[in-house]
Image (cartoon, rainbow, N blue to C red; front, side):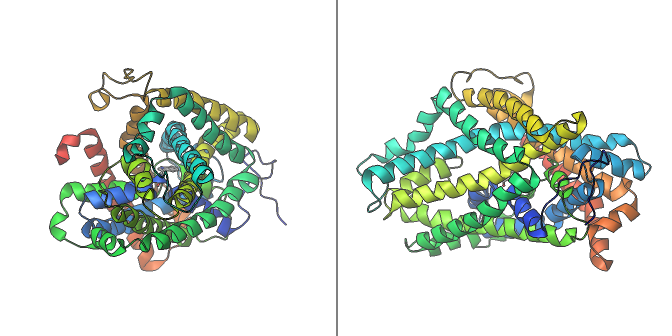
Length: 475
Ligand code: TRP
Protein backbone atom coordinates (compact mmCIF):
# COMPACT_ATOMS: atom_id res chain seq x y z
CA UNK A 1 0.00 0.00 0.00
CA UNK A 2 1.28 3.43 -0.90
CA UNK A 3 1.83 5.69 2.06
CA UNK A 4 0.59 9.19 1.44
CA UNK A 5 2.93 11.65 3.04
CA UNK A 6 2.23 14.98 4.64
CA UNK A 7 3.45 18.39 3.61
CA UNK A 8 6.92 17.67 4.99
CA UNK A 9 7.07 14.65 2.67
CA UNK A 10 8.02 12.33 5.53
CA UNK A 11 5.28 11.83 8.07
CA UNK A 12 2.39 9.72 6.84
CA UNK A 13 -0.60 11.96 6.32
CA UNK A 14 -3.68 11.55 8.38
CA UNK A 15 -6.87 10.54 6.60
CA UNK A 16 -10.34 9.05 6.98
CA UNK A 17 -10.50 5.29 7.00
CA UNK A 18 -13.44 5.26 4.58
CA UNK A 19 -15.78 7.39 2.53
CA UNK A 20 -18.53 6.66 5.07
CA UNK A 21 -16.37 7.93 7.93
CA UNK A 22 -15.83 11.21 6.06
CA UNK A 23 -19.52 11.59 5.20
CA UNK A 24 -20.56 10.95 8.82
CA UNK A 25 -17.97 13.40 10.14
CA UNK A 26 -19.10 16.07 7.66
CA UNK A 27 -22.76 15.46 8.54
CA UNK A 28 -21.74 15.59 12.20
CA UNK A 29 -20.20 18.99 11.64
CA UNK A 30 -23.23 20.32 9.79
CA UNK A 31 -25.89 18.89 12.10
CA UNK A 32 -25.98 20.90 15.29
CA UNK A 33 -27.98 23.44 17.23
CA UNK A 34 -28.70 25.12 13.90
CA UNK A 35 -30.85 22.17 12.85
CA UNK A 36 -32.45 21.35 16.17
CA UNK A 37 -33.27 24.75 17.46
CA UNK A 38 -32.64 27.49 14.92
CA UNK A 39 -34.31 25.91 11.89
CA UNK A 40 -37.67 25.14 13.55
CA UNK A 41 -37.69 28.55 15.20
CA UNK A 42 -36.93 30.35 11.91
CA UNK A 43 -39.41 28.30 9.93
CA UNK A 44 -42.12 29.02 12.47
CA UNK A 45 -41.36 32.73 12.64
CA UNK A 46 -41.12 33.13 8.85
CA UNK A 47 -44.38 31.62 7.77
CA UNK A 48 -43.78 27.88 7.52
CA UNK A 49 -44.08 26.15 4.16
CA UNK A 50 -42.92 28.92 1.85
CA UNK A 51 -39.83 29.44 4.01
CA UNK A 52 -39.13 25.71 4.07
CA UNK A 53 -39.43 25.41 0.28
CA UNK A 54 -37.19 28.41 -0.29
CA UNK A 55 -34.72 27.08 2.28
CA UNK A 56 -34.41 23.82 0.36
CA UNK A 57 -33.83 25.82 -2.83
CA UNK A 58 -31.05 27.76 -1.04
CA UNK A 59 -29.39 24.56 0.16
CA UNK A 60 -29.32 23.20 -3.39
CA UNK A 61 -28.40 26.37 -5.28
CA UNK A 62 -26.14 28.16 -2.79
CA UNK A 63 -25.16 25.76 -0.01
CA UNK A 64 -24.11 22.75 -2.06
CA UNK A 65 -21.95 24.63 -4.61
CA UNK A 66 -19.99 26.33 -1.80
CA UNK A 67 -19.76 23.08 0.18
CA UNK A 68 -18.27 21.37 -2.86
CA UNK A 69 -15.89 24.31 -3.45
CA UNK A 70 -14.52 24.14 0.09
CA UNK A 71 -14.12 20.37 0.04
CA UNK A 72 -12.29 20.33 -3.26
CA UNK A 73 -9.79 22.98 -2.15
CA UNK A 74 -8.99 20.75 0.82
CA UNK A 75 -8.57 17.59 -1.14
CA UNK A 76 -6.39 19.29 -3.69
CA UNK A 77 -4.15 20.85 -1.05
CA UNK A 78 -3.99 17.88 1.38
CA UNK A 79 -2.96 20.28 4.13
CA UNK A 80 -4.39 22.57 6.75
CA UNK A 81 -6.87 25.05 5.31
CA UNK A 82 -4.60 28.07 4.65
CA UNK A 83 -1.83 25.91 3.18
CA UNK A 84 -4.32 24.10 0.92
CA UNK A 85 -5.53 27.41 -0.52
CA UNK A 86 -1.94 28.62 -0.89
CA UNK A 87 -1.02 25.51 -2.87
CA UNK A 88 -3.96 25.85 -5.20
CA UNK A 89 -3.29 29.57 -5.64
CA UNK A 90 0.41 29.22 -6.42
CA UNK A 91 -0.22 26.32 -8.78
CA UNK A 92 -2.77 28.52 -10.56
CA UNK A 93 -0.29 31.39 -10.84
CA UNK A 94 -2.34 33.54 -8.46
CA UNK A 95 -1.27 35.40 -5.35
CA UNK A 96 -0.60 33.17 -2.37
CA UNK A 97 -2.46 35.70 -0.27
CA UNK A 98 -5.73 34.10 -1.28
CA UNK A 99 -5.01 32.01 1.79
CA UNK A 100 -6.62 34.83 3.73
CA UNK A 101 -9.99 33.20 3.01
CA UNK A 102 -8.87 30.22 5.06
CA UNK A 103 -7.05 32.27 7.69
CA UNK A 104 -10.32 34.05 8.41
CA UNK A 105 -11.85 30.58 8.74
CA UNK A 106 -9.18 29.47 11.22
CA UNK A 107 -9.82 32.56 13.34
CA UNK A 108 -13.62 32.15 13.08
CA UNK A 109 -13.42 28.51 14.10
CA UNK A 110 -11.49 29.47 17.24
CA UNK A 111 -14.00 32.19 18.12
CA UNK A 112 -17.01 29.97 17.39
CA UNK A 113 -15.74 26.96 19.31
CA UNK A 114 -15.22 29.25 22.30
CA UNK A 115 -18.90 30.13 22.65
CA UNK A 116 -20.28 26.92 21.10
CA UNK A 117 -18.84 24.96 24.03
CA UNK A 118 -20.51 27.36 26.45
CA UNK A 119 -23.83 26.39 24.88
CA UNK A 120 -22.68 22.77 24.98
CA UNK A 121 -22.30 23.32 28.72
CA UNK A 122 -25.95 24.37 28.99
CA UNK A 123 -26.90 21.11 27.29
CA UNK A 124 -24.83 19.20 29.87
CA UNK A 125 -26.66 21.08 32.61
CA UNK A 126 -30.04 19.94 31.28
CA UNK A 127 -28.78 16.38 30.98
CA UNK A 128 -27.92 16.62 34.68
CA UNK A 129 -31.28 18.17 35.59
CA UNK A 130 -33.28 15.48 33.78
CA UNK A 131 -31.04 12.66 35.02
CA UNK A 132 -31.57 13.83 38.61
CA UNK A 133 -35.30 13.87 37.98
CA UNK A 134 -35.26 10.32 36.62
CA UNK A 135 -33.44 9.20 39.75
CA UNK A 136 -35.72 11.08 42.12
CA UNK A 137 -39.17 10.53 40.66
CA UNK A 138 -38.74 7.55 38.33
CA UNK A 139 -39.97 7.45 34.76
CA UNK A 140 -43.67 6.87 35.25
CA UNK A 141 -45.16 10.36 35.21
CA UNK A 142 -44.14 13.59 33.60
CA UNK A 143 -40.89 15.38 34.28
CA UNK A 144 -40.52 17.51 37.44
CA UNK A 145 -43.79 16.34 38.96
CA UNK A 146 -45.35 18.72 41.38
CA UNK A 147 -43.00 21.55 40.52
CA UNK A 148 -44.19 24.90 39.27
CA UNK A 149 -43.66 25.40 35.49
CA UNK A 150 -42.29 28.86 36.27
CA UNK A 151 -39.57 27.15 38.30
CA UNK A 152 -38.69 24.91 35.33
CA UNK A 153 -38.55 27.84 32.92
CA UNK A 154 -36.49 29.62 35.54
CA UNK A 155 -33.72 27.02 35.35
CA UNK A 156 -32.09 28.81 32.43
CA UNK A 157 -31.95 32.28 33.99
CA UNK A 158 -30.78 30.52 37.15
CA UNK A 159 -27.90 28.96 35.24
CA UNK A 160 -27.09 32.28 33.57
CA UNK A 161 -26.75 33.85 37.00
CA UNK A 162 -24.12 31.33 38.04
CA UNK A 163 -20.84 32.23 36.32
CA UNK A 164 -18.59 29.61 37.95
CA UNK A 165 -21.03 26.79 37.11
CA UNK A 166 -21.23 27.92 33.50
CA UNK A 167 -17.45 28.04 33.25
CA UNK A 168 -17.18 24.56 34.76
CA UNK A 169 -19.69 23.13 32.28
CA UNK A 170 -17.93 24.92 29.40
CA UNK A 171 -14.64 23.36 30.51
CA UNK A 172 -16.24 19.91 30.63
CA UNK A 173 -17.67 20.19 27.12
CA UNK A 174 -14.47 21.67 25.71
CA UNK A 175 -12.48 18.98 27.51
CA UNK A 176 -14.41 16.20 25.79
CA UNK A 177 -14.00 17.98 22.45
CA UNK A 178 -10.26 18.28 23.04
CA UNK A 179 -9.99 14.62 23.97
CA UNK A 180 -11.33 13.48 20.61
CA UNK A 181 -9.43 16.03 18.51
CA UNK A 182 -6.17 15.20 20.27
CA UNK A 183 -6.61 11.53 19.38
CA UNK A 184 -6.40 12.29 15.68
CA UNK A 185 -8.49 11.90 12.57
CA UNK A 186 -8.93 8.12 12.64
CA UNK A 187 -8.55 7.62 16.37
CA UNK A 188 -10.81 10.42 17.60
CA UNK A 189 -12.64 12.71 15.17
CA UNK A 190 -13.88 9.83 13.10
CA UNK A 191 -14.75 7.66 16.09
CA UNK A 192 -16.95 10.31 17.59
CA UNK A 193 -18.86 10.71 14.30
CA UNK A 194 -19.19 7.01 13.55
CA UNK A 195 -20.68 6.28 16.98
CA UNK A 196 -22.61 9.38 17.76
CA UNK A 197 -24.25 10.21 14.43
CA UNK A 198 -26.10 6.88 14.10
CA UNK A 199 -27.11 7.14 17.78
CA UNK A 200 -28.29 10.66 17.06
CA UNK A 201 -30.48 9.50 14.14
CA UNK A 202 -32.03 6.72 16.21
CA UNK A 203 -32.82 9.06 19.11
CA UNK A 204 -34.25 11.72 16.81
CA UNK A 205 -36.58 9.24 15.10
CA UNK A 206 -37.60 7.59 18.39
CA UNK A 207 -38.48 10.91 20.05
CA UNK A 208 -40.32 12.07 16.92
CA UNK A 209 -42.46 8.91 16.86
CA UNK A 210 -43.07 9.25 20.58
CA UNK A 211 -44.08 12.91 20.22
CA UNK A 212 -46.46 12.05 17.37
CA UNK A 213 -48.63 10.13 19.85
CA UNK A 214 -49.21 13.30 21.84
CA UNK A 215 -51.94 14.35 19.41
CA UNK A 216 -50.39 17.48 17.91
CA UNK A 217 -48.50 16.02 14.94
CA UNK A 218 -51.02 17.23 12.37
CA UNK A 219 -51.06 20.70 13.84
CA UNK A 220 -47.26 20.80 13.67
CA UNK A 221 -47.13 19.59 10.09
CA UNK A 222 -49.63 22.28 9.14
CA UNK A 223 -47.56 24.88 11.02
CA UNK A 224 -44.35 23.87 9.26
CA UNK A 225 -45.52 23.03 5.78
CA UNK A 226 -48.54 25.13 4.84
CA UNK A 227 -47.36 27.12 1.86
CA UNK A 228 -48.39 30.74 1.65
CA UNK A 229 -46.29 32.50 -0.95
CA UNK A 230 -47.44 35.92 0.16
CA UNK A 231 -45.20 35.39 3.19
CA UNK A 232 -42.09 35.00 1.04
CA UNK A 233 -40.80 38.55 1.40
CA UNK A 234 -37.22 39.81 0.93
CA UNK A 235 -36.25 39.51 4.61
CA UNK A 236 -37.71 36.01 4.79
CA UNK A 237 -35.70 34.95 1.75
CA UNK A 238 -32.50 36.34 3.25
CA UNK A 239 -33.24 34.56 6.51
CA UNK A 240 -33.50 31.33 4.51
CA UNK A 241 -30.17 31.90 2.73
CA UNK A 242 -28.47 32.73 6.00
CA UNK A 243 -29.88 29.66 7.72
CA UNK A 244 -28.88 27.35 4.83
CA UNK A 245 -25.38 28.71 4.93
CA UNK A 246 -25.03 28.44 8.73
CA UNK A 247 -26.53 24.97 8.84
CA UNK A 248 -24.01 23.60 6.35
CA UNK A 249 -21.11 25.03 8.42
CA UNK A 250 -19.78 27.08 5.49
CA UNK A 251 -17.28 29.92 5.67
CA UNK A 252 -15.29 28.48 8.57
CA UNK A 253 -12.86 26.33 6.54
CA UNK A 254 -14.21 23.21 8.25
CA UNK A 255 -14.92 21.54 4.95
CA UNK A 256 -11.51 22.55 3.55
CA UNK A 257 -9.92 20.95 6.59
CA UNK A 258 -12.03 17.78 6.45
CA UNK A 259 -11.63 17.61 2.65
CA UNK A 260 -7.87 17.33 3.08
CA UNK A 261 -8.35 13.92 4.73
CA UNK A 262 -10.41 12.53 1.84
CA UNK A 263 -8.95 9.95 -0.51
CA UNK A 264 -8.48 10.54 -4.25
CA UNK A 265 -11.06 7.90 -5.13
CA UNK A 266 -13.98 9.67 -3.51
CA UNK A 267 -16.44 11.62 -5.67
CA UNK A 268 -16.77 14.95 -3.86
CA UNK A 269 -19.94 16.02 -5.67
CA UNK A 270 -21.62 12.86 -4.43
CA UNK A 271 -20.53 13.29 -0.82
CA UNK A 272 -21.53 16.99 -0.83
CA UNK A 273 -24.99 15.99 -2.02
CA UNK A 274 -25.31 13.40 0.73
CA UNK A 275 -24.23 15.85 3.41
CA UNK A 276 -26.65 18.54 2.17
CA UNK A 277 -29.51 16.05 2.00
CA UNK A 278 -28.90 14.64 5.48
CA UNK A 279 -28.55 18.08 7.03
CA UNK A 280 -31.82 19.24 5.50
CA UNK A 281 -33.64 16.04 6.46
CA UNK A 282 -32.51 16.43 10.08
CA UNK A 283 -33.74 20.03 10.16
CA UNK A 284 -37.18 19.01 8.85
CA UNK A 285 -37.49 16.04 11.20
CA UNK A 286 -36.33 18.21 14.11
CA UNK A 287 -39.33 20.46 13.44
CA UNK A 288 -41.62 17.43 13.45
CA UNK A 289 -39.96 16.27 16.67
CA UNK A 290 -40.09 19.47 18.68
CA UNK A 291 -43.36 21.15 17.67
CA UNK A 292 -45.70 18.23 18.46
CA UNK A 293 -44.29 18.07 21.99
CA UNK A 294 -44.64 21.82 22.47
CA UNK A 295 -48.11 22.02 20.93
CA UNK A 296 -49.41 18.99 22.83
CA UNK A 297 -48.59 20.85 26.04
CA UNK A 298 -50.52 23.85 24.72
CA UNK A 299 -47.43 26.06 24.60
CA UNK A 300 -46.34 28.66 22.03
CA UNK A 301 -43.66 27.67 19.53
CA UNK A 302 -42.19 31.11 18.94
CA UNK A 303 -40.18 31.54 22.12
CA UNK A 304 -36.94 32.07 20.13
CA UNK A 305 -33.85 31.12 22.13
CA UNK A 306 -36.05 29.87 24.95
CA UNK A 307 -37.73 27.23 22.77
CA UNK A 308 -35.31 24.43 23.48
CA UNK A 309 -34.11 25.33 26.98
CA UNK A 310 -37.36 26.65 28.48
CA UNK A 311 -40.50 25.79 26.52
CA UNK A 312 -39.48 22.21 25.84
CA UNK A 313 -38.55 21.24 29.45
CA UNK A 314 -41.86 22.77 30.50
CA UNK A 315 -43.65 20.66 27.84
CA UNK A 316 -41.99 17.47 29.11
CA UNK A 317 -43.76 18.06 32.45
CA UNK A 318 -47.08 16.96 31.02
CA UNK A 319 -45.83 14.03 28.97
CA UNK A 320 -45.86 10.43 30.19
CA UNK A 321 -42.26 9.41 30.78
CA UNK A 322 -41.29 13.04 30.35
CA UNK A 323 -38.16 12.91 32.50
CA UNK A 324 -36.67 9.99 30.55
CA UNK A 325 -37.62 11.42 27.15
CA UNK A 326 -36.25 14.80 28.22
CA UNK A 327 -33.01 13.16 29.27
CA UNK A 328 -32.73 11.33 25.93
CA UNK A 329 -33.56 14.53 24.07
CA UNK A 330 -30.70 16.45 25.64
CA UNK A 331 -28.29 13.54 25.21
CA UNK A 332 -29.20 13.68 21.52
CA UNK A 333 -28.54 17.42 21.42
CA UNK A 334 -25.18 16.89 23.13
CA UNK A 335 -24.18 14.35 20.44
CA UNK A 336 -25.07 16.80 17.68
CA UNK A 337 -23.20 19.63 19.39
CA UNK A 338 -20.11 17.54 20.12
CA UNK A 339 -19.60 16.41 16.52
CA UNK A 340 -19.83 20.10 15.54
CA UNK A 341 -17.44 21.37 18.20
CA UNK A 342 -14.92 18.67 17.25
CA UNK A 343 -14.95 19.90 13.65
CA UNK A 344 -14.48 23.46 14.84
CA UNK A 345 -11.53 22.71 17.10
CA UNK A 346 -9.90 20.69 14.33
CA UNK A 347 -9.60 23.69 11.97
CA UNK A 348 -7.15 25.77 14.08
CA UNK A 349 -5.55 22.61 15.49
CA UNK A 350 -4.61 21.35 12.01
CA UNK A 351 -3.25 24.77 11.11
CA UNK A 352 -1.10 25.18 14.22
CA UNK A 353 0.20 21.62 14.07
CA UNK A 354 1.42 22.13 10.51
CA UNK A 355 2.58 25.72 10.89
CA UNK A 356 4.80 25.07 13.92
CA UNK A 357 5.54 21.42 13.25
CA UNK A 358 4.25 20.35 16.64
CA UNK A 359 2.34 17.29 17.72
CA UNK A 360 -1.44 17.23 17.34
CA UNK A 361 -2.06 16.85 21.06
CA UNK A 362 0.03 19.92 21.88
CA UNK A 363 -1.54 22.02 19.18
CA UNK A 364 -5.08 21.00 20.14
CA UNK A 365 -4.35 21.78 23.81
CA UNK A 366 -2.98 25.23 23.06
CA UNK A 367 -6.03 26.09 20.94
CA UNK A 368 -8.37 24.67 23.58
CA UNK A 369 -6.66 26.80 26.24
CA UNK A 370 -7.34 29.92 24.16
CA UNK A 371 -10.95 28.80 23.63
CA UNK A 372 -11.26 28.30 27.38
CA UNK A 373 -10.20 31.88 28.13
CA UNK A 374 -12.60 33.31 25.53
CA UNK A 375 -15.31 30.89 26.64
CA UNK A 376 -14.98 31.93 30.29
CA UNK A 377 -15.35 35.57 29.25
CA UNK A 378 -18.39 34.61 27.18
CA UNK A 379 -19.91 32.71 30.11
CA UNK A 380 -19.30 35.66 32.43
CA UNK A 381 -20.96 38.04 29.97
CA UNK A 382 -24.29 36.64 31.24
CA UNK A 383 -23.52 37.66 34.78
CA UNK A 384 -20.43 39.25 36.35
CA UNK A 385 -19.23 40.83 33.09
CA UNK A 386 -22.70 41.83 31.93
CA UNK A 387 -21.62 45.45 31.55
CA UNK A 388 -18.43 44.72 29.65
CA UNK A 389 -18.98 45.61 25.98
CA UNK A 390 -15.66 44.87 24.23
CA UNK A 391 -16.63 46.37 20.86
CA UNK A 392 -19.09 48.89 22.26
CA UNK A 393 -17.57 51.65 20.13
CA UNK A 394 -18.69 49.89 16.93
CA UNK A 395 -22.38 50.56 16.22
CA UNK A 396 -22.99 46.96 15.11
CA UNK A 397 -21.82 45.65 18.50
CA UNK A 398 -23.09 48.41 20.74
CA UNK A 399 -24.23 47.17 24.13
CA UNK A 400 -23.22 43.56 23.41
CA UNK A 401 -21.30 41.32 25.79
CA UNK A 402 -18.50 38.92 24.84
CA UNK A 403 -20.85 36.07 23.92
CA UNK A 404 -22.88 38.16 21.48
CA UNK A 405 -19.78 39.79 20.03
CA UNK A 406 -18.15 36.41 19.29
CA UNK A 407 -21.36 35.22 17.67
CA UNK A 408 -22.04 38.41 15.70
CA UNK A 409 -18.47 38.92 14.54
CA UNK A 410 -18.32 35.43 13.06
CA UNK A 411 -21.81 34.88 11.69
CA UNK A 412 -22.39 38.41 10.40
CA UNK A 413 -18.92 39.32 9.12
CA UNK A 414 -16.21 36.64 9.00
CA UNK A 415 -18.24 33.71 7.69
CA UNK A 416 -19.92 35.55 4.78
CA UNK A 417 -16.65 37.30 3.82
CA UNK A 418 -14.71 34.02 3.81
CA UNK A 419 -17.43 32.33 1.77
CA UNK A 420 -17.55 35.17 -0.79
CA UNK A 421 -13.76 34.92 -1.20
CA UNK A 422 -14.08 31.13 -1.57
CA UNK A 423 -16.56 31.55 -4.43
CA UNK A 424 -14.44 34.16 -6.19
CA UNK A 425 -11.32 32.06 -5.75
CA UNK A 426 -12.82 28.80 -6.99
CA UNK A 427 -15.05 30.40 -9.64
CA UNK A 428 -12.67 32.97 -11.14
CA UNK A 429 -9.10 32.70 -9.90
CA UNK A 430 -8.04 29.08 -9.57
CA UNK A 431 -6.87 27.15 -12.62
CA UNK A 432 -9.88 25.41 -14.22
CA UNK A 433 -7.98 22.16 -14.74
CA UNK A 434 -7.20 21.83 -11.02
CA UNK A 435 -10.81 22.46 -10.11
CA UNK A 436 -12.22 20.17 -12.78
CA UNK A 437 -9.97 17.33 -11.74
CA UNK A 438 -11.31 17.46 -8.18
CA UNK A 439 -14.99 18.12 -8.32
CA UNK A 440 -16.60 14.95 -9.68
CA UNK A 441 -19.19 16.77 -11.80
CA UNK A 442 -19.50 16.38 -15.54
CA UNK A 443 -21.23 18.00 -18.49
CA UNK A 444 -24.29 20.12 -17.82
CA UNK A 445 -24.13 19.78 -14.04
CA UNK A 446 -20.56 20.97 -14.07
CA UNK A 447 -21.50 24.06 -16.09
CA UNK A 448 -24.42 24.83 -13.77
CA UNK A 449 -22.18 24.46 -10.71
CA UNK A 450 -19.63 26.87 -12.17
CA UNK A 451 -22.32 29.37 -13.02
CA UNK A 452 -23.67 29.22 -9.46
CA UNK A 453 -20.24 29.56 -7.84
CA UNK A 454 -19.37 32.50 -10.09
CA UNK A 455 -22.59 34.47 -9.85
CA UNK A 456 -25.49 33.38 -7.68
CA UNK A 457 -23.53 32.27 -4.59
CA UNK A 458 -21.38 35.40 -4.20
CA UNK A 459 -24.37 37.67 -4.83
CA UNK A 460 -26.52 35.87 -2.26
CA UNK A 461 -23.64 35.96 0.22
CA UNK A 462 -23.12 39.69 -0.36
CA UNK A 463 -26.82 40.03 0.48
CA UNK A 464 -26.30 38.22 3.79
CA UNK A 465 -23.25 40.35 4.54
CA UNK A 466 -25.08 43.63 3.87
CA UNK A 467 -28.08 42.64 5.95
CA UNK A 468 -25.73 41.55 8.72
CA UNK A 469 -24.00 44.93 8.76
CA UNK A 470 -27.10 47.05 8.13
CA UNK A 471 -29.99 45.25 9.84
CA UNK A 472 -32.22 48.24 9.03
CA UNK A 473 -32.20 47.10 5.39
CA UNK A 474 -34.79 44.48 6.20
CA UNK A 475 -36.79 46.51 8.69
N1 TRP B 1 -23.75 23.92 11.26
C1 TRP B 1 -23.78 24.00 12.69
C2 TRP B 1 -25.19 23.83 13.18
O1 TRP B 1 -26.09 23.60 12.40
C3 TRP B 1 -23.26 25.30 13.23
C4 TRP B 1 -22.01 25.76 12.59
C5 TRP B 1 -21.83 26.85 11.87
C6 TRP B 1 -20.79 25.07 12.59
N2 TRP B 1 -20.56 26.90 11.40
C7 TRP B 1 -19.91 25.82 11.82
C8 TRP B 1 -20.40 23.89 13.15
C9 TRP B 1 -18.64 25.37 11.58
C10 TRP B 1 -19.13 23.45 12.91
C11 TRP B 1 -18.26 24.16 12.12
O2 TRP B 1 -25.41 23.93 14.35
